[in-house]
Image (cartoon, rainbow, N blue to C red; front, side, top):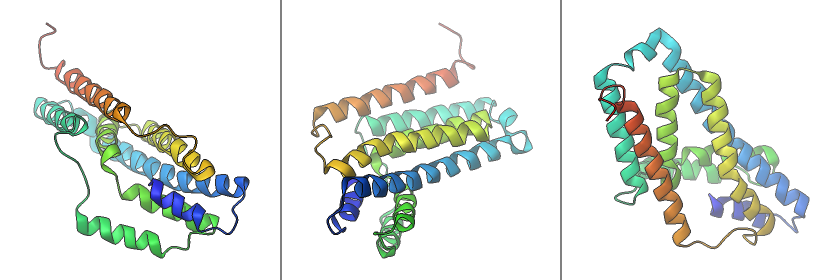
Length: 200
């Protein structure tokens, strides 16, 4: 997403600091609202037809635990999760056809960018959606994923405003952060299984 926001800002004629911040913010809000919508829909679907009761069945808990373990393995670097190339290309082409200079256009570019889920966020996002489906809480789902989108947007705003001056350099620390997320996903899998297994 960093190249997208960078190209939007670079495409402006003599962008001011305020204009760069405004465009970056609209981009991030579009992205965050897309995630929030996914959270609300997942929460609503979880609440319908008493799905929460079905989600407590052992087969469902074991399946979700396996999914969390697979997501954790992705965070540990065993493989990358991505949308199929054909779908990514179509979404990318659509996002490039939207005029980037106006705030509304940048908002929609942010929304489309959220659909082109990058490998670094797909595991936490999928894990969050699975958890939200078990809570059956649309408000929690919307707020949680809106916060996720805003958190992801902080570095994007920093890039948009400062051209990368405010961001730490890429390095080993990024792998450590992914590993921490992986450990948290394993923890959620264990938490789900503790309902079925003896405490020791």
